Length: 180
Image (cartoon, rainbow, N blue to C red):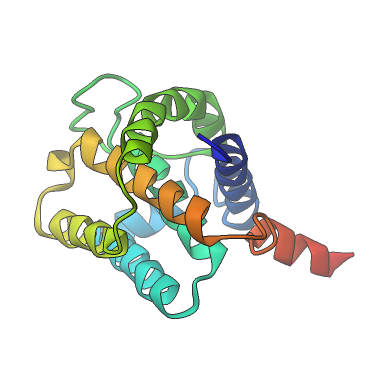
């Protein structure tokens, strides 16, 4: 599973830096506030935008954002508490993300391994988009863990195959580099 460790590190950097950029309070980040204010579909629409943008310009950061948000949704659904998640919507602070990312990482490895055995399909982005559309049409509490893990794995497969110069189009790299 070539480059999987790099992908996990890139996702970790993405949510660490996102926590820095979008901090609100100790209990909530901007994602939590927006989710409360606008409902779940703002999130799925934003992710669908990243799918469309990746199709057009193949930016690494779009795949990283989709994969990172899979983790955030996994956390918001409470899958770190058990296989079926919770009916309560969980806030996704940097502290919670840091604590439960190793669990998420362990869970995604088997999904990535499964997809690595399959031939690379040309429609992975369409599959991801289909999941997002499905999510928008059902209750947040009905989103299944397996769906999120599949999207994450598909993002990795696309990233691993398509992105040659890994790490040079991350938000962290681009935005922090400009500060210097």
